[in-house]
Image: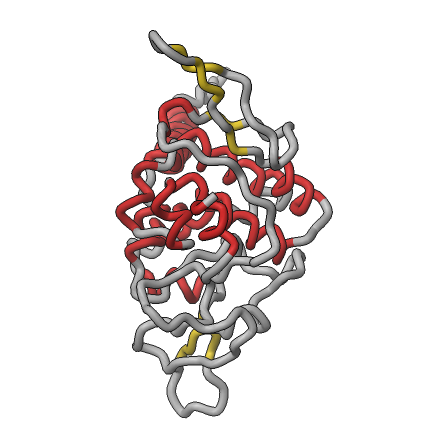
Length: 269
């Protein structure tokens, strides 16, 4: 009950004692730390999942109701106990219906639950806890985002963009439009978007690739870095390597075919 009470209160996203409310719209100048208004806050109105600290017995089941409890039992010499699992059905429904902002909130809530009992009690995640989230669960969340956005949203999409800018977070924030160009400046300057009103909750051709889901950068980029570097998304480099290898192979095949063209000799009679 203590964990459930903790999840209902508080706000995600920082180690600060004084956290701002969800609808605050303050901004900070480029080059400083992200303000409390950026990226992560947690809805106070979601249902609570049961939690068990034995992470190895936790399973994922996207098709079950949010409050469902798994029936898989762990046996010992004295008792049998049912282990809970995390459902992604609510996230799937929100993504399928285009409720992008609600889906973003649900994603943050799921990450807190998956990170463990301590994260639930404090109602936000330490970057050091990301490593304990099972790869299968993170990949399930990522798959839902990608499948409902034509491959434009998701953590793996963000990792690919991050890699392309040599893992420079300032450039990454510009690419995914978490920063915006500061108007009226004589030189090119960027500032962070105010959460939530300045983010893009409509999916369309103009929505930047990788814009969602949002991740807290309230006190720096360690949390975001830990998520993007999670082994769940190692397949990104593998796919890119295969893609590059395929392109090189095609180029070599083309050159070889051009070099082996047989020309008919000219005969004089």
